[in-house]
Image (cartoon, rainbow, N blue to C red):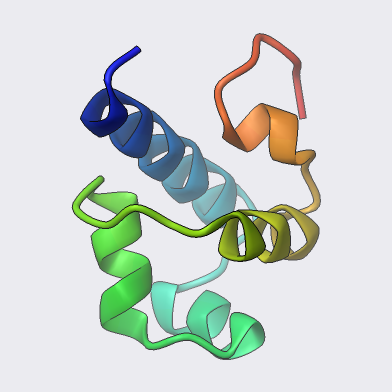
Length: 75
């Protein structure tokens, strides 16, 4: 899988889970200590998150890092 495809897949999964949890981008960003525009860029697949950010996202969203990084595992 190409890097940009992976970024887009992670972003789509982030958005779906965030919405399932009833969180706004702003609320998720605040919880993570990130800027809302960065969270939006991650969801659109425009930014490449560090492993640290992926780990923090997984904890905040209540899923495994494996799920965020596109395995077939269910959350």
